Image (tube, rainbow, N blue to C red; front, top):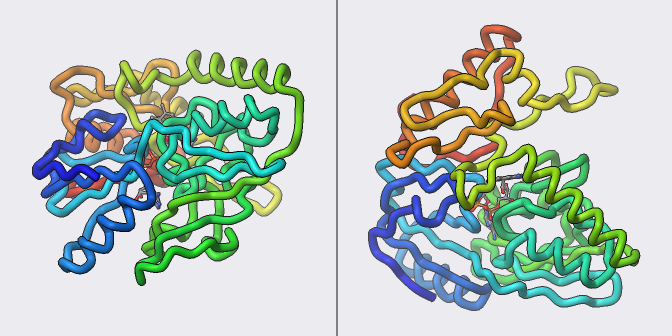
Length: 300
Ligand SMILES: Cc1cc2nc3c(=O)[nH]c(=O)nc-3n(C[C@H](O)[C@H](O)[C@H](O)COP(=O)(O)OP(=O)(O)OC[C@H]3O[C@@H](n4cnc5c(N)ncnc54)[C@H](O)[C@@H]3O)c2cc1C
């Protein structure tokens, strides 16, 4: 565990934006997390939990409290027949790559999605009509009472890009996923195809800072309907040419905002995304809901 007082959150988010926090507590695994959380609770210090920081917009003023970061580059996975047990701190994309090497099918959709396994489970990350919750056998959490419990996924009421994990104050430490045997060759080819598709449509967050799709896709208007891409409404509303300060809409995807200049601020992104939502509201009378979580103070 490493504690960095006054650390800048820009350094631990893929948007590369955000001011300082009171202290950043870096936990590479469940054991150090449990120690940190126990100490913070004993001291009466509330904290914010983050993983890979790939779904966050942190304000320029930062966050007044302590931030606990559960993330590591270590691919902490093991196979148990057709199931994989994965540490929450591990990168989601590394888990997808591991499943391919183990000739197990069911996590290809996660190829190229940044962030940790824990963050993906908490937000039920997904793509191409599949999501993480569809593969879960159990979720091990550190509960607010300090107990570690291996739980049935139904406790967390998974839905589209949603779970009750954050609302229950639970921290995911490990998950067990059920996959299906398949041939490594076809799986590897499909993973390459998905990574190429992503590279063609999405910015590479390592060189072009972003938090991916900013708004959630739009819920169906009838029981028989399908969810509609927020990007379609944004494109029709003409947002692709929009900029605000150093923030701009990504030229290949109307639902992705990028840090377009080194002096771009979180306030620039905040203003731009509010203008994007207002453009859709004015054209379609539709209220877009952010998928990216705002942290810290932003003007109303
Ligand atoms: C280029 C790009 C492409 C993307 N493409 C996709 C995509 O195709 N599909 C998709 O769904 N998302 C996508 N995203 C968004 C993002 O990568 C996912 O939402 C990711 O799963 C977030 O994980 P994280 O570890 O970064 O979480 P963070 O951003 O660090 O945190 C997000 C939330 O999860 C909570 N959390 C994090 N870890 C835990 C834990 N261990 N236990 C409990 N709660 C936790 C945090 O408290 C916070 O509320 C994309 C982002 C980028 C930058």
